[in-house]
Image (spheres, rainbow, N blue to C red):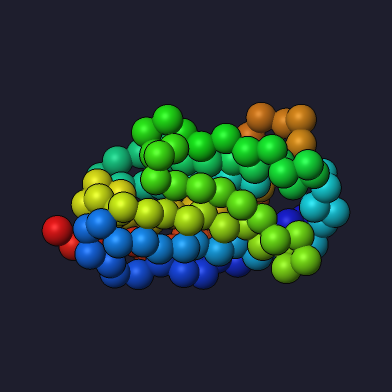
Length: 119
């Protein structure tokens, strides 16, 4: 089992920055891929970024790659999503997720954190 606890988020003006955190526990992290997802109001959840815990390779969605970065602190068992130059359309709930490396579906999810961007 993997437990994911998120922190960060909140209210920010357009153009501002936020950093979301996701702390994992419960399983050998070297076997995990971590992901961040965004769900805007009234829309389906969509992929934002992923990072392989072992080796740290990562990928960020083309739609935000110029503004968002994903990173990890292995010592803290934490994955981060740094969001810069935020836009109103970035608002919504952000979810951290984990999957066993080599599998397709993210089977473990954080509680979600709200991001509000004022224009």
